[in-house]
Image (cartoon, rainbow, N blue to C red; front, side, top):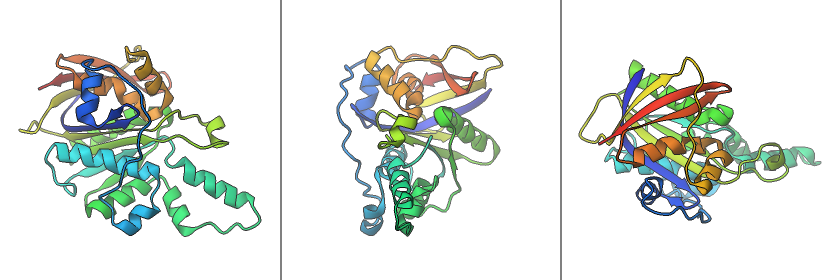
Length: 265
């Protein structure tokens, strides 16, 4: 069992625009009303870099910034873990189209935006952070794997770690192979010790035997959860939004689960 503390949270998804509004929905205080998600504006980035980035980078930066600033932490003050099941599908699709044509010259900007750690790189540019950053991919279990990585870093050598999880839909024909229904981004700022910023305590256990995974009680939120790999975070975010201690189970690999006990303050 590993214990860690939450100082800040963020969410961006259709009908869940920011933690303040999203928390009320996830806590059951307001009805969930799905609505198209307006593309985030990457205000953190210089104008030139902002024009070069796609929706995936902007989504990752927006939730990371919200989680940090909600906790009152400077944006350049913590290590980061970025997780996505596939990164920017629009960029990959454009590169595939170029390579299938007669002129196979790939734009250098397109190429560097296609790599999996592109959001991490833009985070460094935007925040001027010199802290370590890790980028991971774990298919449909990316969020749980990122949560484990953040917990491990806190136990070994970090005081605070920001976890940023995000996935955006692919265009056709990639969508037919890897369907991601809607954009979803979430971020959690963790600390190793309880501080005056702490909003919740988590106890994470890797289950010896797989348990039944947690689902959302609202049908529309459950469709959002299963329609985007990183939206598998929703049961944990809902527990953080509530006032009562809860335990949620997340799938961390095929046939393996992770139990997380949540106590909010």
